[in-house]
Image (cartoon, rainbow, N blue to C red; front, side, top):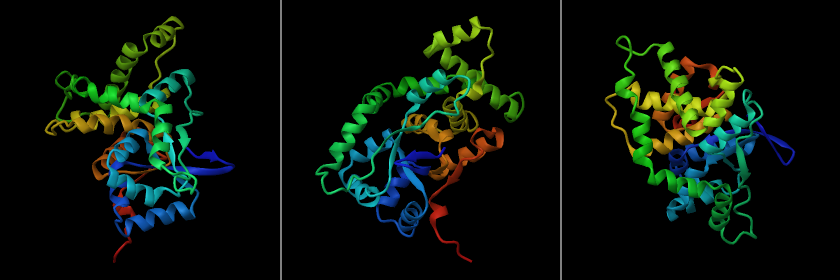
Length: 278
């Protein structure tokens, strides 16, 4: 969704950690193509706070990132928990949810002596650093929860049908809300309302990402990093363009064939920044 920043409307371009890392390492022609895109179009690069924390932990990568992206109108976007809470408050219509936490524009301004310190303070205010530590501690539990339905949710035939996939997404998200936000579910039931999964784009994104990583490909070995990748993907329904690593981009293309809720999201990889050769 486009956002208004200082009177100018920007489209949001999400850049995942792998793309930031590769482009920041002076990777050409991708680096120049991406910077020129942001400079010539009203497109603002945005990042998950989890990505920025990871970048800051590596001094060499942060230096390259700061040099490459420091002058751009960059934004931090909300995490999974923040989005779910806002979707509950906005139920049943999430259309007005703003995915942006704050701007990190101007990190290379002359009066900022320590851009890393500025970022740390912004992230601390968002609470993302504390949430990340909780997730890191609980990765085995979270991963086990994501995998728990695999043996109990086999397809009726050789492959999952579109209907089965969408029912998986509805079921896993209803269970999540019933466990984490029981008062919300109780209020729905008391008012005789039907649970509308379309009111929770972030949860749908998480559930679809979980399905295509673990359920659609049972031969794939789960990794701890999958947890963060899945949680960070929650914001993508609120984004206009996403530059992703190849596997995540392919997952989103599969989701688009099943559900239109991210139909307007432009899915890109580093290959899209390279000149077309004939």
